[in-house]
Image: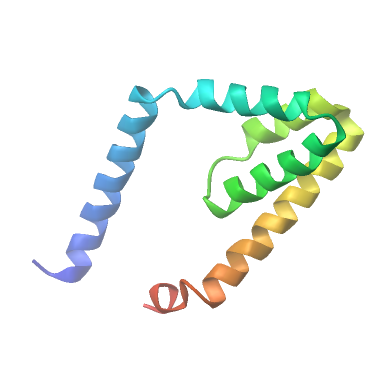
Length: 108
């Protein structure tokens, strides 16, 4: 099979597997547990939340649920700064990965 025809098949298969895993695994429960633990951590929780947001950004996870959670946990002003810090850290991390670890893959 031609390599260019195989790429869409791999992408669809990966998406189907991730979608299936999200239906079987308790992903929402894990996120709720993480947010509860971050909330219980007090001021250090804001840093933990920003790191969680950065990790989600690098993993290309949707940011809307985490953005809403930050607004709920920290209010609109502090939540804005926590999300902005996390998004910028995540963007920087994705950039560094694209320039170093994933360079050949991105190049192809």
